[in-house]
Length: 547
Image 1 (tube, one colour):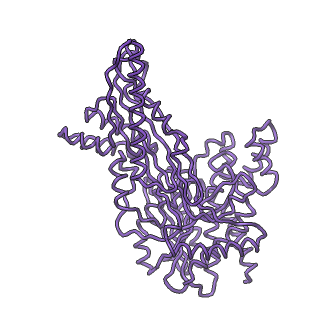
Image 2 (image 1 turned 135 degrees about the vertical axis):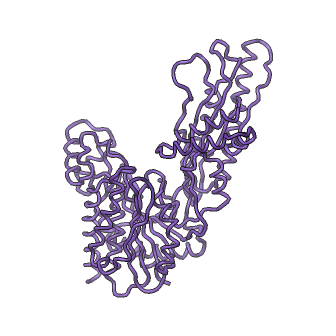
Image 3 (image 1 turned 120 degrees about the horizontal axis):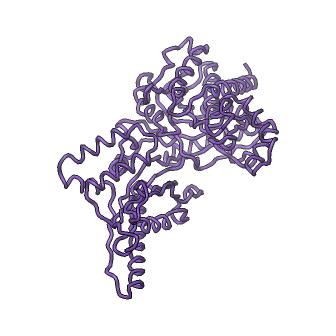
C-alpha cells in the first residue's frame, strides 16, 4: 500500500470508528461507561492483527461496581522501544441536550436536528457561531465525539496502520481509560499497572502521546497543535469559623461571612496569583463555592462558612500553593478582624479590644483532634468511608472538615485550610531535559511535513489548558509533595495514592480540535480530525521510536 493510500485508509477508519464509538454511550459513572470497555475490546479483537495476537489485547480493572476497565492493545515491531497512545472514553452527561437527549450520541441525526433548531429562532453569539459551523459542513456534533472519542479513534487508526508495516521499529501500546471527567481513576489505575505490563512484554516505554481534544474559537490555529504540557490544578479550601452572636448585638461576636468576604476578595481573579511560565500565563484562581453551614432561618450570625477555590498553575508546587494560600488567608483574616474592631470603636465611641484569629492547616487540625484522645480519628475515618462513594468532592471534604473542627473543639475566629479535591500535577516536556528537547526537535520536523502534505498549519502550544489525564500519564509524583497533599486533603478518595516503582517518560498531547465541548453544541472539526490528525499521530509515534 502506498503512503497516500495508507493515509486515506487511516482517515476513513478514524472517521468511521469515531462515529461508531460515539453511538456507544459512556457517561461517567453510568453502567454504559462500564460496558464500553468490553465493546471496544470485542471490536478490536475482530481486527486482523489481534485475531493473530489475542494475548496482546486485554483489559485492566479500574474501579466501581460494575467494574470499569482500561482497554490495552499492543502492536509489536522490532526491539523494546515503545510509545504509549492514551485517551479516555467516558463523557459528561447528556442532560443539557434537553429534548434532543435521545439523539445526543448519534452524530449525523443530532447535527441535522441542531441545525433545524438553530434555524428556527433568534440566536445568541455562541449559537450563531454554532449554526455557521454546522452549515459549513466541516463540523459534526455528538456527545463525546470531540471529547474525546475522535481522539481514541485516531490512536486506533494509527495503531492499525503501524500493524500493517513490514517489521517496523519499536512497539505501540494503545490504552483507552474511563473516569477522566471525574477523578482520572482510569488513567491512575493504568499508570499503576504499566510497570507490570512493561515487564510482561519486555517493553522500554520511551514516550507517550495523549489524544485529548482542544478548543479553538477562531479558525483552528489554536487547535491544530502539539501540546508540550498540561496545566496543574489545585482545589484549596478555607473553612471559616466565626463567633456567632445575635444580629442585634453584632459586635459581641464575629460573622464568618465577614472573614470569608475578605478571603474571596483577596483571592478571586487576582492577577498576581496567576503563574507565568513557558511564555504563557495561567488564569488567576476563582472561587467555586461559598456557603454557610446551616439549614433554615436563624437570626444568629453564621459561625461556619465553606469556601473552595480553583487554582490553575504553570509552575507552583504543592508547597508553594499551601504557603501562598496560607499567607493570603492569614492576611485576609487579620484585615477582617481589624475592620470589625474599627467599626466597633466608631459605633461605641471607644477603642475596641483587638480580636485575634487563627489559621490552621487540615493536618494541624488533625493534630489537635489527636490531642483530645479517644476514638475521634476512628469516627472521622468511618465518616470518610461512608462518604467515599460521593461524586462531589467539595461536599465530601466540607462534611469531614466540619466534623473534625467540631471534634477538635475549635472556636473562632479561625480558618482551616487544605485541599478539597484531587490535585492534577503540572507536566511539561521541558522537565525531561535534553531528552525532551530532542523529542521536540523531531516532532517539529514531523509537524512541518504533515502540515505541508495536508495544506494546513500545525504549531506547538506550551500548556494544555484543561485538566487532563496527561497529569498522571508518564508522571511519577514527588513523594514529599504527595505526602503534603495527602495530609491536607480530608478524604482519602480524593488523594492520589501513587505506589513506588512507577514509570516516568515524556509525554505530549496531540488531539482533535473543535468547539464547545461539554456543551449542547459540542462539535468536532472533521477535516483536521479525520484527515490530518491520524497521519500526524502516526508519524509522531514513528519518529519517537527511532533510536
